[in-house]
Image 1 (cartoon, one colour):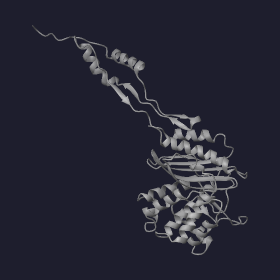
Image 2 (cartoon, helix red, strand yellow):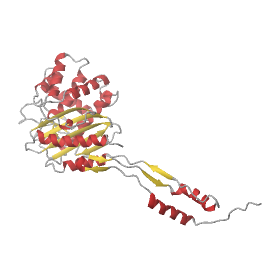
Image 3 (tube, helix red, strand yellow):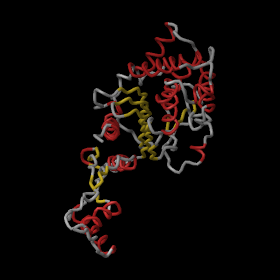
Image 4 (tube, helix red, strand yellow):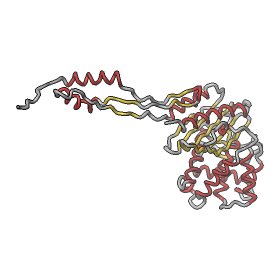
Length: 360
């Protein structure tokens, strides 16, 4: 008995065309997440399975040349679903803001990846109570732990209320060594040292502003959108978002605060600052970005507003990731209701939380 080798030939082009036809019929491509506007969330993406035509050619060739093993085991690869993107979250936020008859600014920072989402991040707004965040940060820069009783009481009260500015002015007075205006200047200078040059306090809270000379910033020098920003104190969503990022980084032993002020901040101080803002959200205005946030999330935020502006700057620790969310809403020179702002901010916060905690 003698083995006689099979002599066979086939068309490589037709074999590949056959595999391509099989792939067309049987492939299940991965499905990316999709925005669900009505639910303010994203539909999770679905994994897929794709035929690898190149890797499937050798087993197909073996089957064609074999008298007994006529079955070919093709190579099929599992493909993971694409992760959600900040661009998709941006679609959700823009859809929610579409009905808002005013100017909105949103800044989102993924503290895990460093990615940012920006909607009008450098538009100047009246700073209001949001600027109590940098004032609190300055207190921790100037004083070592533990804070004395008087400073602690003033800081706690300043953070726990929005409608009274006396405690914040008392803190500015401390920062200015007995001069409240000097304390405002000190806070502004610290912000500038950190590169946050669109934020300032030209004077303490609740001062007449008829003769106030505002401070020129890159934001208000080039502003194409009018938000009726007060010359007394201004900021942007981008600046407050980056300040929160710096505070969070400091709490982990890194970031700009420790670089610019190496002997004046410590991770312990930054962690205490975050915890103090978590524990002392204002009780005299709606919860804004904290409204409806699920229990697993921890939010430290500082809201503020004037008659036509509502803002909130938040640091969020959530099961699916940590992030910064800052929102400003403005109806230039027209009264803006806290309750109306609360409804919008609650939805923006819900959409952002859902993005970071999507079942991926």
